[in-house]
Image 1 (cartoon, rainbow, N blue to C red):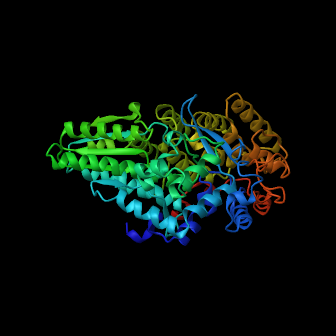
Image 2: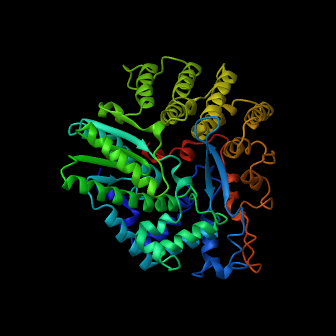
Image 3: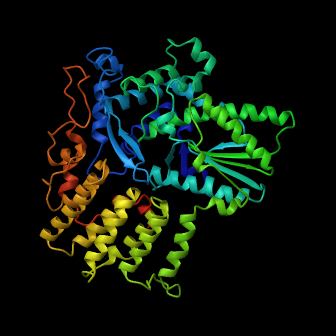
Length: 513
């Protein structure tokens, strides 16, 4: 793939980086129905700030840090009944303020120069710096392709040079990042400890993140590209510290050849000597501990089959299963089994590999090749709906695809039946804790039938009534500023919305086909 198809944020000017980070899709990289549009509110926040410091529009200097629910949090299930990931939509004003601060010309130069230091060791390769697409693909799709090429495919290629690979990741990375480690990363730890009250960019980022978290210094919010970039600052510092230790061992002849690939908090460590990969993982543990981070022992494994280890088992399983579902002698995809049996195979996949990427792939294929082409009501439509609901219940990463499939099936049913089924699904999910994300997508399913339907999630209430409870707590803002949230709802889009959720709404790679 040619290099000009994507551009790293660290290769941008400060002006271009600001524009990139202020894109609506980068401000909120949580998958939401398309009638949530944050372009206007980001522009509105930029106008309110107008190059002012945040304290100039606050009631008092400490009013922001004294406000507990500045940001809107959506808890998303990570794949088990009791594991939840908090995703946050930051208050637009604090987000824009942080972007403006980071992308001031001198601050941006300092950060980008530091990244050059992080990346000096060619044996440690970071492939997760935020990217902007230079093609018709969106930025997220280009990021996924970058992961596929530079992690999965690179690992297969490296199998010819290395015999051993350790795979590992950082436990609860974002929620464990110590905000004081940000100035350590940008300025060095020694500088930061001597200049605690200095207005260096590292200290500014540290204090601003702390202010928007009610003074908390453990953890950074997750859910936007800006925080992905800030995480990269800390993890780039870890790369540098690890590199220094490894270079010393290499010079002393105690370490042979090695290669490390890092995608955010996910590491692949390669060597021809088992002792070397074990030495590197021990040093990595030490370096991470110094910045309050720890490796996830349950996801750390040593492999001697580097090629097999590069491909996730769910992917291998489903690729083979999908081939068995349709007639390979045909130029078109003519399936050997009905939709219900096809879905049952996806259910088996989801039971074996819950919340995996292959479930999304399987559901996309089902929708694209079968569900979207339906012209008549399936005889077993209620059984199909039940199986889809089960998959959605157990695999929250695939909710939007399940909702899209249901939206097409509902077109063959009377409105009263649709409302009854939606009520049954909603009742089923309301037995679970933390259902905001599920409710947001169930509302997309129901809104074309009954907009006034009741949901508990604040974003859902906003759809029903723009003047309902606020998404963000803006009580810290000066009283002469009336912060209006209503522009996040695109009424024009709602008025022209299809009952069927089109693939263009949910598939990152829609432009490909």
